[in-house]
Length: 247
Ligand SMILES: [Zn+2]
Ligand SMILES: [Zn+2]
Image (cartoon, rainbow, N blue to C red; front, side, top):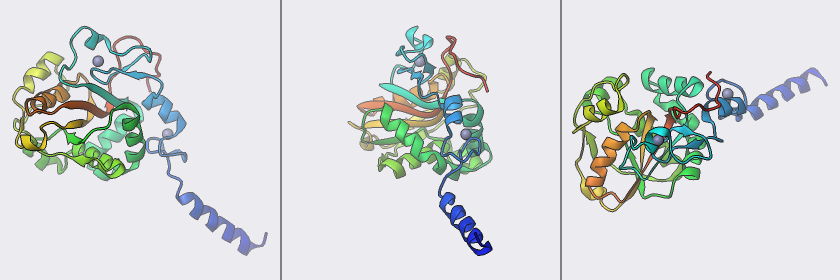
């Protein structure tokens, strides 16, 4: 090949592969999520606890907590795209704490594909609301950004009307009971007319005990919402030993 054609070939190659998205989690070229990261963080072969979304053995329907009656009661089903660890955890933390909400666009397609493969069809999406003080600090509500991604991909309506009226403190170090207590009265429905009789996906970034989803679901039920399906980017693992790598 002459120098000219070599150069032309290089440019064509670069243009062609510019469309090929790198893996969102590791930067590998086979995106949006490479096979290794899919195996390490998303575990598509594991089940999801129908009660709280935790990753469980594929032959089970519920985790140990939900089987023992310690799970959410107000949700019809919960699912999570992956495990809150490694690349997925870093991605969520980058979005939230380093103020990169636009990065949600990168995972919009695979996350939406997961959602429609797991959950029934609904009338719309409700994002877990953020208190206005926190919203002023962060500048955006990550649950709303995720809901927007689902709206773009699937054309689902975003249903407003729920607010967080109490600026609850961090839940990280609290037990499930303490979380439920902490969240009591935290949410309120301002516009029940938007919600009555609807079937919704209730969206948040991460779920651990399901206490936040449960607290929102309770006020949604009180407003006549007919079906509520929790949908999160990430969840924890069942306490029972699972054969997963700890990256
Ligand atoms: Zn990867
Ligand atoms: Zn569970």
